[in-house]
Amino acid sequence: MSDPVIPPGASVPIETDRGNMLAAFSEPGFRLFWGGALISNIGSWMQNVAQGWLVLELTDSAFMLGLVGFVSTIPMLILLLLGGVIADRVDRRRLLLVTMTGMMVFAGALAVLTWQGVVTIWHIVMLSFLSGCGIALAAPAYQAFVHDLVGKRHLQNAIALNSAQFNLSRVVGPSLAGIVVVPIGLAGCFGLNAVSFLAAIATLFLIRVGARPVFATAPVWQSLLEGVTYVRQHRRVRVLLLLTSLVSILAMPYSTLLPIIARDVLGLDASGLGYLYAIGGLGAVAGALSLTVRRLFRRRGVFLLAMVTTTGLATATLGLANTLVVAVIALVVISFAATSSIALMNTLLQELVDDEKRGRVLSMYGLAFMGTFPIGNLLAGTIARYSSASTTLAVTGAVLAASGVYIAATRPRVRAIA
Image 1: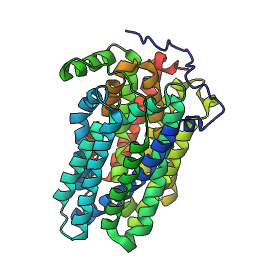
Image 2: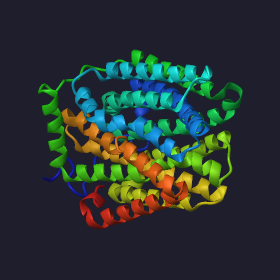
Image 3: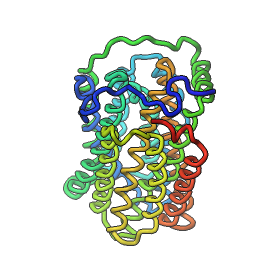
Image 4: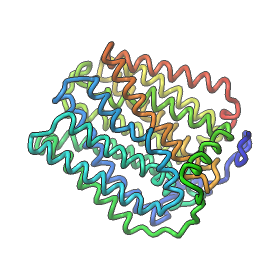
């Protein structure tokens, strides 16, 4: 079945503020939401750096790094579709408040356990799993809430700015972790993450959005199947979800394996690892902001496929790198290309889908992106266990690049999206 909203090759007159890179900030609710999320994500990236180093200190195992990544993301496979159904049925702001409060508690628990010196790898595994459950239930509502705040007029701009916010936190959070990890320790990084959730929670209390119609009245299971059927009937939606999953499985595990690359290949310590994450974040911010420059997107389909292929080539380069300069360049390119492609796929999906299916389709986008993290992390950890982290990235990057070229050659309707 063909897509009813955007015919092949047609332009999409959704965003009208073509000259304003900050158009979505004209909406007060979005400004608040953006600022609260930025502070919270800075804390989350501080914890990400500290937790990776803590796992290495406790286990000295690339496999355990992959396992922790696996358990933190396996809830995406289990709960994301349910989260999409819930996002179409309830007040999305209240759902975000509940889930963020839970994640604040879990971060605080890890801080206390580490501070007391009693933390074990199994504490990390359990708390990572619980936090992953909160993220899985919140993710579809989070994405759909952006549309609730700005509408279709500023949608691509808002998604780009939201992606830039997340990736700006990738610069600031790891940099702060590298600065404060010595004076306040790993426990202090976890504690700061717990405190940072208060900013996001406070802004959600302040935001006021108009009431929206609740479309889903059927039983939960039937609503879920309606969403799956909708995706199956729209070819370009399926291809966009496939591209998203390929980037997630084959490229995103670079972040999980980066502590091994930093220590064993580049000879860096915990502070150096934090700076590597921050450098990658700079590329990601640039990739997100590229979506606000509309003259780059006369052929959005071509740009998307080029960025997917570039992500694969840069991931392979990171695996082959044996000097800091090459690794840094590869990290910047991976981050730029992956971020711009993922954010653009989010935009295209939200433009293609019917409003009453938005939460459920975005849950499948989340499943394709975040839900495949456990597969990618477990695959990367397993390959690295029997070879090396460098070999793993070289192989998975090459496969992603080849997949991007193949889809570009065989899917003209995706190339034709203008």
